[in-house]
Structure formats: C-alpha cells, structure tokens
Length: 326
Image 1 (cartoon, rainbow, N blue to C red):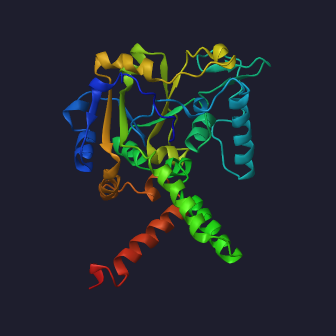
Image 2: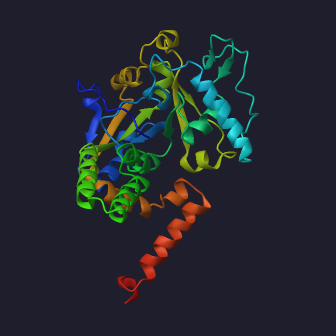
Image 3: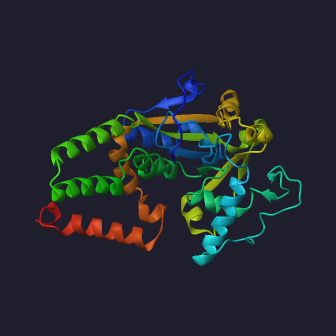
C-alpha cells in the first residue's frame, strides 16, 4: 500500500491520533474490546508510513498528461489477463459497462460508461492494479498486518530483495571484469543509505466509523460478498470511494484530492482515529500477529505462501542451532 508523503502542514487528525510506543500497546489499542470501539461498524486500514494521506492508488501518479481512459483500460486489461490465467471474475466480467445513473457510474468523453462499484474493480485493486478504491478491512489486526507489510515500500526505495540481488550482481560483474569493485560497492552502499533515510518514522492504522461515513460524507463504502473471492474473504476486505470528485477539472490538469479533508469531518463525531507505532517496533508486532495466526499464508493464501511458512517453521524447530532440538 505505497503513497506520496504527506506535505508538511497542520495535521487535521492531530487530536484523534493515538501514539503507541510499543507493539504490545499498539495491539492493545486495536483490540475491539477497547473502550474506544464501543460503537459497532468500525473499519480499518494499515499504512506503512504515518505521513501518508488517504489517497487511492490510481490518483497518486495522475498528471495532466494522463489519459482519462487509463482507469477503464486497466480494468479491460486486467479482465483479459485474468481470462488467460483462467481466473474467474464473479458477477459477469462485462458487468462494469452500464447505462444506469448510479453515483458510481462514470462516463468518458468517448461515450463509454462504466461502474466502479463492480466487483472487478475490487479484485483488481486488491491485486495491485491502481483504481479509485481505497482498501479497508473489518479486522483491525488485518490492518496492522498490512501496516508492517513493507514489500511495496522497500521496492519503491530500492531495498527489495530482487533489487539488492541486482546490486550484488553488479558488484560480481565488476569483479569478473577486473573493474574497481570497491568503488562500485561504495556507490551501492551510498544508494542504500540514501534509501534508508526515507524509511518511515511511524506506521499507522486508520479507523473509520462506517455509519458516520455514510451520514456525513460523500464517501461510499463498497462491500462485495466474500465467498466467491478467497483473498477478500481472508482479509475481510471492503473499499471506500468518493462519488463527488470534480473529475472534469482533474482531467484538465488538476491533481486528485486525497480523502483526508472529507474524512476529517468525522472528527467531530468521534468517527475517525489514527493509531501510530514506531517503525522499529515492526518486528515485535509481526511476532504478536503471528501468535494470533495472522501470517502471509493466512492473509495472502497461496500454496507458495504456505510452503514458505512451512519451511521457515520447520527449519526453526529442527535445525541444530535451535534450543528445541537440544
């Protein structure tokens, strides 16, 4: 879940931000038995960096040069590639075309009308395709899991495992070619150090009261039946979207706004909170979430994830250096 850093200005959510110093305190505050959550219908979102705004992925890199048809093109290509991979799209893959006049229907200048409340948008967003939807979950612990799921963040900073492997290959090529390996290593170390300076100070979990959302904002909640879509079911996923963006102005070159200003109206109703935790506590939080059975194999189910977890646990239990084997 990567976003552009929030501009340095007055934080509208300062008075509803709960700063936790440890992973244990963070977990205690996310417990649904905490007095803060005495009302029902809270939904949650985890973010790698507490400075990030609540901006849907489609809008983060939008510019005046972006073709307004990008969103529809992404969905068409997603469906086509899902068909090639023999992955089903529930509820009719052509159902996103519509003639109805719902608030979630958009029309391009070329005349095409499409409905972003269709389940294909949710599946595409959940799978990493940029859309106007913003991921949330019914589960605060799922949100906490994604707050410390740093894969996309590390990739954006050049610190992903495959990127570091590429750095190593560059050094190896210098060695075999007889070039100055030390200079190359020093250059790559500097690049890594520069990237690490951009690591977040805090991670965050947002909590929004769904009832207040519908009563006081133009932001709508989109929830699809879980049973047909395994990842959405395991993550108890749902999505937020704003139905009153000035899209024609955006298509002329203005930037998309984040959802922050509209969600800030929920401060007066105690309908929004932002819980933060130091980045350095991420490993400790991961240990606590694992005890609650929130692991990659469960949250992002696949045979590969199950295999990775199986091998990691088995080697931890049965290698000679582990106390369990002594």
